[in-house]
Image (cartoon, rainbow, N blue to C red):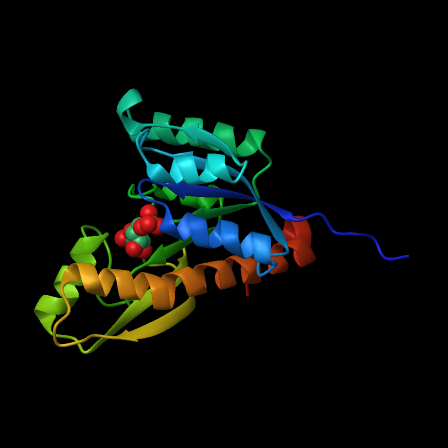
Length: 212
Ligand code: GAR
């Protein structure tokens, strides 16, 4: 008789509206994500609407605000404790607006993924987040942009790419219209897909998992 493999325990880290979190919740419901299960949503912002989305879906939430800790190291220590308490095996950054230190990312090698709203290596790295990414793409005049899901290491937006999807820029785009289209056509598709891909690898390879 075949043994049933339990789903990989996932934490989603958020800071804002949480539309990418919603895409993950919906993908879990519809069975696109089947090798992982979102067990906790952690926000560094107590006002994030993403927390409400998690509550509506019956997922545990936790606020760890950087402002309450003297240093980044203390903030990250609390983060690690929370993740360990929940037995988290995969961390998904879905609009999480803090850069994690090399100390943190090395604990979770190949176990942190992030969605970024451009085709890396364009318009990425420190200072490129949210609407700013789309403002930069429009002012450069690119005709194609998109989104990337990548592993997170000590270099901001520098880890290995897992999935990318391109989106055409239109002549009359504003940063806001471009952001919406990149989300709808790229981010909300590839983040759940990448989440399932990585969860499947972890569940098949167990403790000794190293992504290849
Ligand atoms: C998304 O566009 C995400 O790609 C971006 O912030 C937005 C969050 O929206 N993340 C970054 O720029 C990280 N560098 P959401 O809260 O509605 O998912």
